[in-house]
Image (cartoon, helix red, strand yellow):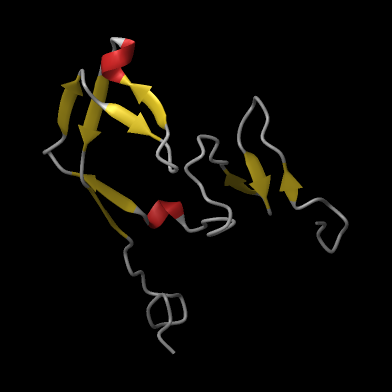
Amino acid sequence: MRSTTGESVYTPPSKDGPGTIYSEAFYSVGNGAWDNTEALAMTGDWDKLRIGIRQDITFSVHADGVITDGAGGVVYNAMQEDGKVLRCVMRLGYAVPNPVKALGGTFPSMN
């Protein structure tokens, strides 16, 4: 894609920093957690996002855990591999403030 002046709207990530789309930074998810069949991108004004971390973070170590894939196949068996599995659980909360728009009203518009 190119802008009306013929410049590329996309700059790939480099060792110096993240990639950009329309001069805004973007980050790719490389750990497999993002499902491209559900959505292609998530955007927003990240300066407005607030995340709260509760104090009840728990950790537990298991020597008899089994990790399976979606089809039920065993990926890792801690007992057979003589290993351990660490389970971490935490709860997060997030909020997006509702700033007043420059022309009045609130965002997002409820029209």
